[in-house]
Amino acid sequence: MKKYLLLVILSSITIGTWALDPLFVHSSAQQLEKCADKDVSNQELSLLDLVQIGVCNNPALKAQYMGVKSAEANVGISRAEYLPSVILSGQGNITGERIEDQNYVQNEPYSGTAAASWLLFDWGGRTSRAKLSRAQADMVRFMYDAQLQDFMLSVQTAYLNVLAAKESLVSAQASLDTYNQSYNEAQKRYKLGMVSLSDQLQTKTKYEQALLAVVLTENSLNQAQGNLAVLLNLSPNTPLQIATPVFNDDFTKIENDNIEQLMQEAVKNRPEMQAQESAQQVAKFNLYNTRTQFLPSIYANASATYGDNWKHASPYKTDTAAGLSVSMPLFTGFANTYATQSASYAYKQAQANTQSTRLQIQNDVWNKYQNYKTAVKAYEISKTVLESAEENERVAFRYYKVGKSDTLNLLTAVAQLADARQNKITAFYDLLLSKASLQKSIGKQL
Image 1 (cartoon, rainbow, N blue to C red):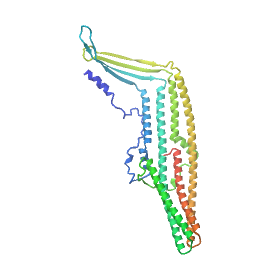
Image 2: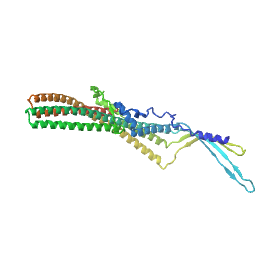
Image 3: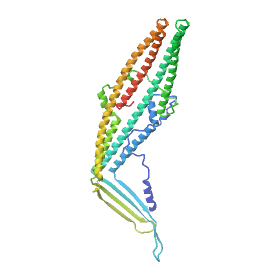
Image 4: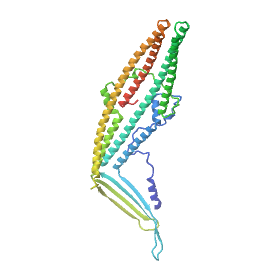
């Protein structure tokens, strides 16, 4: 019976604990799962749907997320230093001996040992290591957040490019209709002898050029849809059904128009800034930990050993021990000295990098804000230009019908209307893209 008792005890320690979190080190954030169950071909997808699918399907984000969980698990390793460690070991042997003029004797001794060790005091070394691992986990998590925000902006940009291409196609078809109307009117007037053949051919040329513009715009739309599908890790020929939102003035406005407050908000919220601040904390606690390596550590130790022989009635033997131990490095070949210097310089480097990152973020917000304000003005001007171009085209066509204007004036007015219509579409989506970039620069997600 004794023979199997030790085996049972030893095998019990192999029970898997990978799913447990007894030291509460893992964050509550969960990786997105089962995103592919959306019917992307027949279901209208909003921007949030597209982001969810893209995040779920992106292998780089999955790898970064696993890095976050791995860093959090390392926090548990450092926290485990506050708890005692217990090691259970055992061994069994078969030994034999033969003495001259005596029978062969076989022994089967076995023994088991339980040893416990507990770090009682190390001048804050394990505390600095625990804080260091926590700061490392925070740094990795903030880097993941930054990558996530970059990806979300990429999806939003591709989404807006698809919407812009759709509106550009509508605009190109409208321009085609206008050129067709001009061409038909020129044909009538040519048959009546009111215009020359050259005028008719000019309107025909403009009509065919407008037809070509429609074909090219359709190609741009197909490419924009393919780029969006590939960004979501889908085949480029996936027929995505994109839900078109109802745009209003709120889509172009930002909540806060104070650039100073926006820069302060960015420094506070940007994951890149938080990651760099965590990196500075890593360097700080690494310096503290390095300094404690010069100092003694005190441990409490205890052990118990049991030994017996399976085949013989020899008495068993037990040994117990308990006490304190002190460990202190006296000389390490100046390794600790240079390790402290290295950690000190790394900490100063991290401080400088933090200041540099802060300035970069402020500059990024400043540039994105200026781009946004310019885009707002450009969009307002484009609306005014379109109104003038529409009125000019109506007047030019009416004058042309009654013979008060020539073909060149009509085609010029139609071309100006087509350009103004397309410029308004471009200005509107440039404004939405600049707003999205500004929001991302201050650390705001969708």
